[in-house]
Image (cartoon, rainbow, N blue to C red; front, side, top):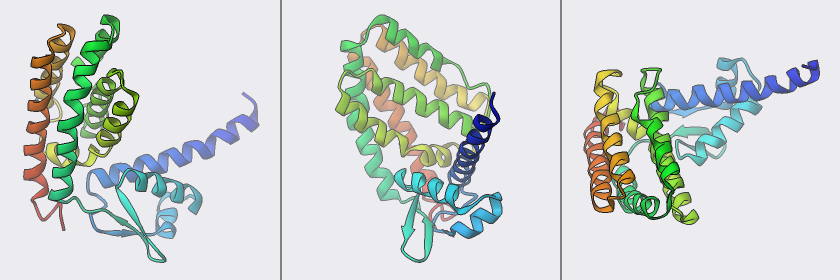
Length: 225
């Protein structure tokens, strides 16, 4: 590989590394909800220039994990009960509709691709679980046959990583998470049988279960300052 190509990839890797580490710090509340962060301090911490820090923070702002404070830096957005309730309400509208659309329009081969989500991630950690969980729900949304619905559903799902983390941070990263994988499996089974009523009921139950866990967790003053 030419040296110029190697050099061009290094800044990209550095930017992705900064973003991934900042995002994980926010998800696990190592960066406390409500706390302020500054580009210069983060640049010194990660031993990079301000440019990849700024790019990472802007991506996190798009995901509603941080907000810009003009001339004061950035703030990690708190997790509020009301915001979580609104997001879950949106999921309960979108996800059953996505399931119904996928059952009506996806091919058997496309539905069979969901089988990859029947297994607990190889890396038995909450960050790996969060990525796996997001992937499952996004995969169903992409099969719904309605591009606008899929985009809307995915936009909501992408905002759930921190809620998923705080709702499951005490779960056993091995056996405990298997229960949730089994729930995914039952949804997949119903979809492959084209049983719309059962699949929608299962996905509603799945979302409601998540909502109860997240509500209990974010009521803690440790999570919501």
